[in-house]
Image (cartoon, rainbow, N blue to C red; front, side):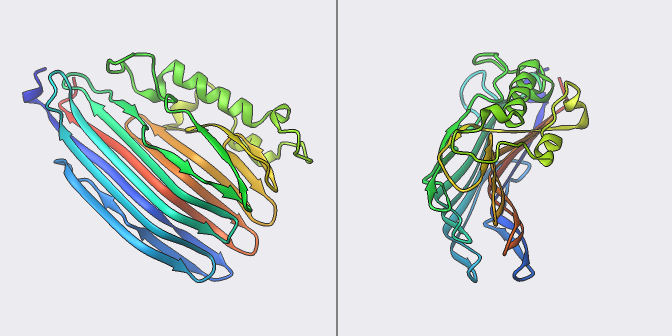
Length: 281
């Protein structure tokens, strides 16, 4: 079907920070620098500065941007870009980072339905846990379906190549043999085993949780399970979480499940990209 007979509806959302605390205070953190893209495309951005919630968390600056347009390059389709950045990030002086950036770019074809996706620009800068530096290696090709420069023939979530890579992630997270030498407690907790249990029918549930983090190294108080860190007297830290369903990609650079002096759930630097072309072809 000719591209001129089709309409693309853009969809992109970005949020720099949000969540809630239950202790030591009850407080809902409204979405910081939220931005959504018009279904017709275009450009939008938001910025905030010097956010502080008592002594619980703070950031120096944050900004988001979303953009969508039909590419002028011959043979190329509808391009969507979404970016979410937090600078000077600090939660309870335990999790700190100079800069977090989630960035997703998708391109939907003029003919066909499945987009190309990349995460170039995504980064952690000077991430620390309890003052200890964490080195992060990112897997920008986690959603690569092996189609080279062409468009995928199927949604990422149903692709065997993608499924195998996620299965490998889960296996690495639940295998105590992968613990670094300095970890004292070499037992994989039940919650990790249950939450990251893979089977080939996972995609049938409608979404697949994985991570853009390929490797995280560094010695800190606690235990690493792939991109997940359990920190005593603080809680759980999730890095580079990527949620994929049949139509969208959502990337969150830091998500926290606090279980200590501070209790609550927080997310920092989140980007989501989607889009639908009608009629389908």
